[in-house]
Image 1 (cartoon, rainbow, N blue to C red):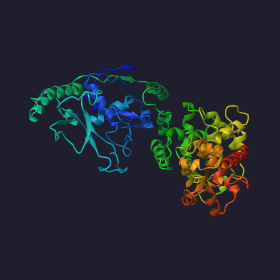
Image 2: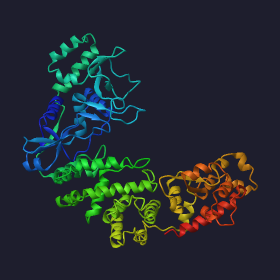
Image 3: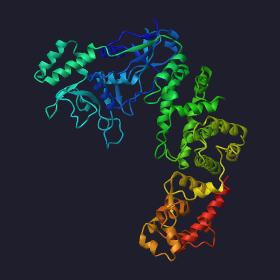
Image 4: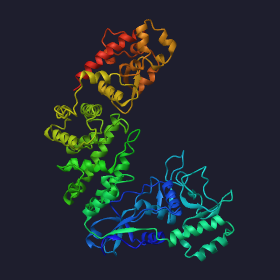
Amino acid sequence: MPNGFQQPITIKEAMDNIHGRKYLLPAIQREFVWGNDQIELLFDSIMRDYPINSFMTWRICDETIKTNYKFYEFLKEYRESYQKENPYISTAGVADFDAVVDGQQRLTSLYIGLHGSYAYKLPRKWWANNEEAIPTRFLFLNLNAKINSDIDNTKEYEFKFLMNHSKSYVDDHGTYWFQMKDIINLKTLSDVVRYLTEKDLLSNSFATETITKLFQKIHNEKLINVYVHEDNDPDKILEIFLRTNSGGTPLSFSDLLMSISSANWKKIDARKALSELVDEINTFGNPSFRISRDFILKTCLVLFSEDIRFQLKNFGVSMVETFEDNWINVRKSIVSAFRLFVELGFNDTNFRAKNAAIPIIYYIHNNNLSEDIVKSTYSNDEKQKIAKWLTLSFIRSIFGGQTDQVLTKIRKALRDYNTDNLFPVNELISAFKSDPARNYNFDDEFIENLVYAEYGTLDCDYILYLLYPNKVTNSIHRDHMHPKSFFENAANVQSLHSEETREYANDKKYWNSVLNLQLLDVYQNTHKQDKSLVDWFVEQGITKNELLVNSDTSLDINDFLSFIKARKEKIQDLLSTII
C-alpha cells in the first residue's frame, strides 16, 4: 500500500482501533498534555460540524521495528500529576499496527471522553493521590439546552467533566446530564429512540436533536481522515514527526529522541528513567527547580559526545548505549548538583540559566564527587568557588541565547585543568577573556549600575552573594542595614539633620539597594528586626569591615549620606577585583 490518505473512518471505528491496539503510540510521542477544557472544546467542535483536522500514522510491518522499538497504548484514565504515562506494550511478534505520529492529543481526548476518565486537583486542596484531592471525573453532555452565550460564547454545547457521578443523571436543577460513554453502547438509531423513550426525553426536542446528532457524529459520519506512512525508516519518520508537530504546543527534541533511546537501552526504560529524574529534581528548592528531558540529554551529550548539538546523528546506537552504561553515575551527578545548588541558596527563580548547571554536573561526574560534594565535610572553599562562578555567569548572562559553543568552551577548560578535584573558577573565567560578546569583565560603568540593584531583584541577590561569599546558604536573609521601616516613615526622614541626607533617604535607589543591604543568617536577622544600625552593630560586636565600610564611617542614621557614599566606594573596589 503506497503512502497517502486512506478511506475516512468514523470516531467509533477509531476508538475501536485504539481499544483493539491497532493504533499505538511510538516512543517519540510525549505525554498527554491537554486540559479538560480542551477536551470539552473538541467535542463541542465536533457537534458544531467543525473539522478536527487529519491524522498521520506510521504503518508498522517490519518485525525488527516491532522488536527493537518501544510502543505504548493510549492513556485511558488520566490523573493529574499521578497517572499521565502511557502504558507500555510489547509489540514483538504481534500483527501489523499503526503508530500515531500526528494526532495523539486529539485521539487521546476522544478516547478519554468516550471510554475513560479525567481527574484533576480541586482548588485549595493539598496534592494527594486520592479522591478527596483529585476526584475522578467523567465526561457528560447537557441534554436540556445549549450554553447561554452570555455565560460562554466560545461553545454551544455544554460538555463537562463531572465528579461524583458514574452514569447519566438528573441534577437538582432538572438538567439531564448524559454520560458520553453511553453513546458507544447505542448501536443504531433505534437504540437512540429507545434510550430517549426510557429516559422520558422524547418530548424534549433539544435532547432528541442533540443525542441524535451525537450518535451520527460518533457512529456514522466519517470524520477521521488518516494519512498512512508506509516507510519503515525511523529517521525519516522522526523528520516527518518534527515537521508535522512544529505548530501548536511545542515539542521538545527529547521527545523525538525517546524512540531511539528506548529502543537501545536494554536494561533500563529510558523514558521512565528520565521522567523519574525530572520529577525528583522538581522537588528540590523553594520554589522548586524545573528541568526537562532535553536538559538531561544535553547533559549526556556534554559528558560523552564531542559534538553536543541536538542532531539525530549524535544519538546513534553506540552513543545511546554509552548513556545507558553510565546512567547510574550520570543520575547521581545530576541529583548531587541540584542538592548542592539548594545548599548554596539557589532555586528555580534565581538559577537564571539551567544550562549553567551542566558544567557543574560535568565537574562532579568526571571527578567522582557525587557522594562527597553534598557532605558537610566537603571543602567549603570549593563550594564557594562554584557559587561564585555561577553567580558571575548569571550576572554576565554567559548562558544567554545559543549555548552550545559556551558549553564546549567550558568543557575544554574543565578538561585542561584537572588537579586534585579543585574547581577551576579562574580558568573558566579566563576562557572567555577574548570573547567580546560573552565575558566576565566588570568595567566601571557595569559596576556603577550593579550597586544600585534594588532589593528583590536577581541582580541584587547576585551582588550580595559575591560580597558575602561565606553566607551563601539556603537559609540566608537579605537585611536592610539601616531599617526599611525608617525610610518608609516620612516623619523619620524629615527629622534628619541635613537636606542632602534627606534627599538620599527619600530615594529608594539608596536605601533599598545593594548599598544598604547585607546578608544575615536566620538567627541574626530575627534578632536584628528594626533595630538601628548603630545599636545592632554594638550589640553584635562586629567590625565595620564586616559591614563593608571604613573604620571611620559613622553608622548614625543622620550620617546616612556619608554611609552610602563610603559603602558605595568599598563595594565598587571589591567588585572591581572580584575576578
